[in-house]
Image (cartoon, helix red, strand yellow):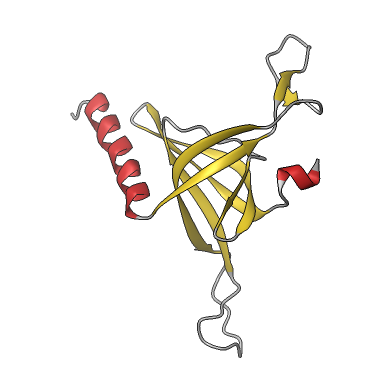
Length: 137
């Protein structure tokens, strides 16, 4: 039976390799958070806080939204794509984080924790277009 720690280490290295195949360095503009005061440790956006900036190396991947629909569109102009972000186990991303790449602002959707061999190996999330955090405040 394989050692879970060795397998976990290999899985984490695999995620890092996927990122390095098509790396993108981004700077996340993260809304400032404060404790909600209910004693449960839940953090909520601070309307008076200054956004934090976090620099990460990630992979931004296009993904087909659904089954391929054959329309009478010009070749190479499919609009049936969405984008996803992948980060390693040491890089934290949160839903609602905003960053700029590929000539537009993006907002991170709900984050999926990728778990294997009893540990976290990475995080992934769908992206949607967003406004600049400074413009939307």
